[in-house]
Length: 385
Image (cartoon, rainbow, N blue to C red; front, side):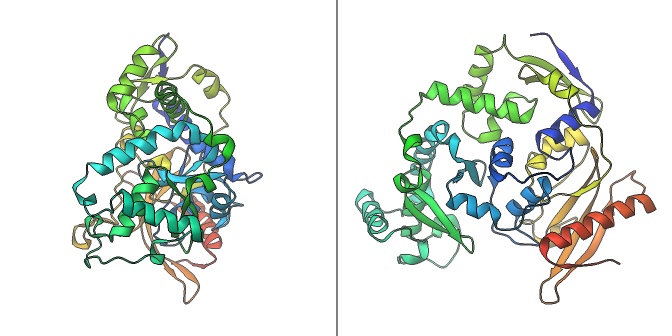
């Protein structure tokens, strides 16, 4: 189709709008709708101030409260599986996720560290206990394991449970204090969705199309990485087959170079309906989907960000858990916070403005307002320097 050009400013606005960060975080709270718009919500066990998935949803709607997402897992609005990481995926997407179960099972069966997994008979015994006793966590089983916590040193029963979870034989029933409880998939997945069987081609078409819809614009690699559900060759074949109906989009990057990307029809109409720019400041989580692809973030915003949680302390440039600060369509800084739950306070350890950003009184006022808002969400008292 006819080429479309997007300036860097337009591309930024569209990207943030796609991720629910362009408008004000208000309105009626609809967690399934937010999840469907994002595609999935990544889960993370670390509770620095609040857990990543709770922070991500609060960033989209200020009425959200920590723990609300877990209720929607239990009510079967979402199911848990693996995209680029453990995530909650809208339950209506289940029929288009079937191939992922078999793809993950095949990948695991070829990985060396799964050699200690129970055989088919051993896995059947684990499954039989769950069938008889109901949802169980890995703590309800016992098998000897070496002390190290690396994947390849996990107890045999844990490997067996996870294999069946990846393969879609088991599913997450619920979580208690973030501990996963496994149940039979047929007792978790709604019957009307279990009976739907789509061809691989139909699933690939949905995975590519829905990824591009949520990306707004992207390369073949962007499309592939979104769900992690297709091989590179499958994405390239899909693009070739649908080339006539897709938009070829020239996007100006932060460094003023251009990239030739793809988009679905209707992108121009979407741009025309975008809300006017807001200058409010947002404190984003390091796992926020808007910045998950670090290279894309740097190309689009000129913002170089690295999550240093797993970086040795001596090698960190910024700190253990550093939050990006977004103002309108520009990243203006990053901040290191400290939650003192015993005292009920949230402290600012250090704030770094980005190069070229003047941190004047007006900008500081915006930051203080956002800091106080985040502290209220966490149930802590904000302590300003």
